[in-house]
Each structure stands twice: as structure tokens, then as C-alpha cells.
Length: 346
Image (cartoon, rainbow, N blue to C red; front, side):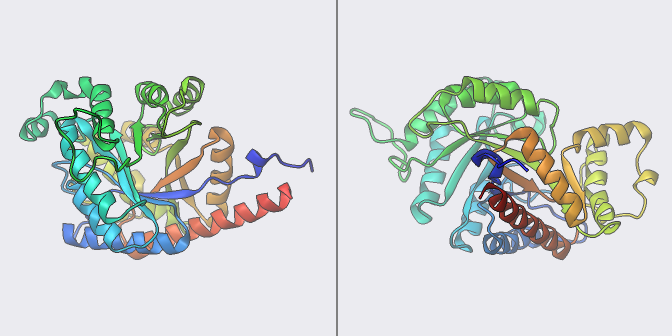
């Protein structure tokens, strides 16, 4: 067997993307407590980051007040990085976000990430309830620069500053599911996170554009791409059964009936139509579901295909204990793969 190169031998770190799913029969408080519990376990298992996402007017997601939840999770952990995946910047004035994340950085120094998205994370009616204009997304690049300036060093004559925030240099990320985000991240020299766990179509073109057009910046000299996947790890057929909660939830989204995360069912074919099955399967195509060996093969192939610098893993599982076990299995698979590649490289 030929000796592997350093890049081939490297296994990218794993992180967690948590939507604080509210399961049927549970409350938002349950979901938030489970998020902290998951973060504490993820820290122990060696995950690098724990990110939470901003969504509004969605009964099944409890992380709408994202900065508040980040503070709750960071306060209950010690070393894992905690951040947003992401803050939907069109919903907020950049100064407000600079103050929120400057405060988080002051409280938990060196552990806070600020991932930024351009979508509103909700419907247009809720956008108006947020007192934001539907066209706010058009100023996203300018707003990112304004936010970056508020988090940077105080400039001579600067009349408005974020307190806390100024001089904190909280690391920014650009989140995206299209070429736009890839181009913006590249032009600003920022790390890029692609949402292939629910929008896989442009994954490879976006990564190619980002890497080809990257311009070095004060924050990063080289491109850094994190890629989202879904993982449901358990022995078959239980893993496939657990996956039906997410499949039902996405089917409900296409039906316009978003709700709480449903319990798994024995036969998903009785739930969706052939058209819905095709839509949902396409949306969730970047998912590893099955036994540890199945997940391992999926992980290896995905790393080879994308050359991702980091993987961020979503896992919408109804039962919290099963979700913990899935992330634990993934951590075990990841460590075994790292040992194997190190052995080959050596």
C-alpha cells in the first residue's frame, strides 16, 4: 500500500450542530436542558464546537434567542467552543450582535464563534414581526463588514462602539447553501460552513469556488471549509427507524405543517407519497444512517469527496438517550479512523 500524504492521513475534527429540537410530549425547557447535556457529553467525547441555530416561529426549535442559549451552554461547559450556526444577520442590527457576542466572549474568552447567515430563518410574516424589511438580506455583505468593524480594534475618531465587543475579535464565519456564501467568504477571507445537511445540491461547486477565490485576511491566511451532515448511528434496523423522525419532520415542512419533532415510526413508506419521498430523500442525501461500520464508510467517502477541514453534525433524534448514543458512536468511529490513518501515514 502506498504511503498516504499528510492531507490523506488527516481526519478532520467533528463538531455538533444543534437546533434544540422540541420533541412531541416535551417542552422548550426540556429541549434546552437536553442541548446542554449533549454539549457536556460532546465536550467529553472530543467534539470541537457546539453550534446553535437561529429560527423563529417554529414550534419544534427552541433556539430562537440564540445568543442566550449559547451563553447557557457555554456556562455549563469548560473547553468546547460554542457558537452560532448561525445568527441570521438580516434580522438584527450589526451593533446588537457585536454587543451580544462581545459579551459572550468577555464571559467565555477564546470559546465563542459567530457564524452568520443571510436567510431570515423564518417566513415573511415573521420577518415583519421582527421589524425587519424583507429586503434586508440584500445588505448582508455590508452588514458583515460593519459587524466585523465593531468587533475589531477601536479606530481613531470612532463615535460608536460595541461595549463589550470592541477589540474582542470574535471569529466570524459565513454560512451558506449556495455559491453566494462561498464567494463572500472567499472575498472576505473568512471560514465557510456549507449547509449540506439540508441543502446538498451545490456543495461541491461551492467548495470549489470558495477555495479557488479565497483571499487571505487578518483572520485566516488559508481557506477553511466546514461541511454539514446528518448522522444517525445505531445498530440496524434501529438506526433507520430513528431516522424516520427527521424524515417525517421534513415531509411536514414540505406540507407546510411544521411542528414538534415526531416520534419514530416503523414504516416511513406509509407516511409519505412517492413525490414527497423523492423531495425528502434529495434534501437529506448527505446523511449517514446505520451501524458504526456504515457510518464509518460514509464518513470516509465524504471526507475524500469534499476534503472538508471540519465536519459539523446534526442529529434530529426523538429520544435524547438515543441521540447521545449516536454522537458517542460517531466519536468512537472518528477516533478509530484517525488512529488508522495515522498508522498508515507513519
